[in-house]
Length: 472
Image (cartoon, helix red, strand yellow):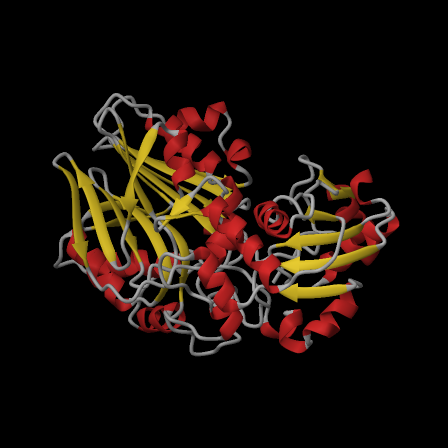
């Protein structure tokens, strides 16, 4: 499993997008805009499908949205009378980062050609895929999304909606998917609602599905509502339709609010930015300390740092500058190169010189980058560094679409909090409590499996299975 030590974060998931419209909207362009708004959810590959009811055009490749869809490629999927489109930005959580695993996936069936884009993971995909292989099924990729698509295609006696509902009942885990035929757009979400999916609509009547509301706003749509846990929705010329397939107690992923979702998103009626501020307030209540300045680790620590400063009365300041051009561009081969990459991405400002600093971040995975950031602040003249984390310690891997490390590589699973403090070189280290996190997010129940080891949507038969498990 490739890990970029310059982030030391749970790696991104994927983003999905879909539109259904009466012509003459340029759905290829709108899908491009939606995917660009979701770029933070996946930077390895991008793709889209567009159909006008007869033709079905697909384009996808490795790279960022702007790299994959230059003007030539965008023109190749443009259809003047397009009715349906879906798109995907990928971070690989099952299957290698290779072009054949890029999405949307497509297949020809007795229901016509279908395209699927998927965010999340099916925890029983290996067993279902093995059973299908023994029955003679063919697979062209090594990601679990193709298992869902194959299940839908094999239900030859059912219509597309019925076949999709049957496949939802067969697969377990955390997922949100958009599916299209030549004439229909379909969206569905796992029974626990672990992965997000929202519905929007433009003033001209066009319907939109997306992983986050930011993609709706990018195409001029308004948020209508979330797709509910276990719900299947579809759009055709008669409008929006809904079917509850298998709803359970809602447990959406807590890391959507901690880290993944954009700060301008609202998921399951919970505002992301406001929830992060409440996390910071709760951190200050649970873990006060005398200091001179509150400094966030940008960008994901900003909301919690604002909340901590408000509650504590200690001034907030930007003690770390983040280079906006230092993205995930390479995997550094040596320790020296990794340390230089962190310095390329983050550099301290004069705000920390001679100050007792409260450093606020959203999570600690391995602790390697946290240690380097603490060192940066000390080198810049910080007299004390008190590390505050707006998530509980991550002690278990995620099986629902977040590429966390194996459990043995999670520092909180093998070290006490004080041992982690010593490892990263902080004067003090505290994490928000699990109950404090729940209170800060509020709203629905939460999936907190990475903190507790309690997995609401099931686990793989082999708990140590990694994202290459289907590469047989």
